[in-house]
Image (cartoon, rainbow, N blue to C red; front, side, top):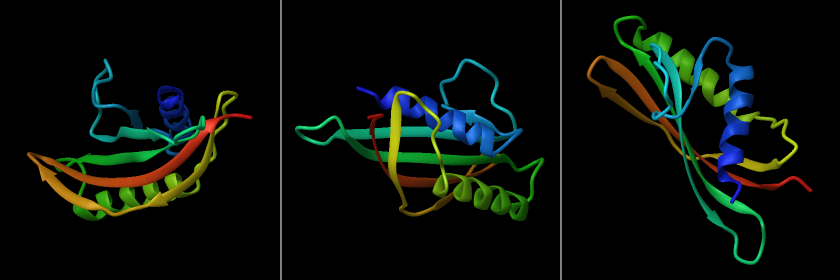
Length: 126
């Protein structure tokens, strides 16, 4: 399974595309700052091949005490643009496609959170 390798490659690419923004998983063992992108990946293996297809959900989170709704919307737009134009630099995994699905604007305590699921296709680098 290469889903962990894929997740790490996406994290590295988004970190380069969004400097100064925390990119990671909710369970990372470090403090998550007021502005972050939290990733969740769920995949299925394409039967009879090394390819995988799945849903990568990016949760753009901003602390409402530090960012306005308009600032959060700009942040979300930047995250979406970075994901739609994502280029992986990896010796192990290759991204075959990204398709945006929807957005879900949520409020959690004092946070703005926008969940953006993307269908992704990936596999080992040939």
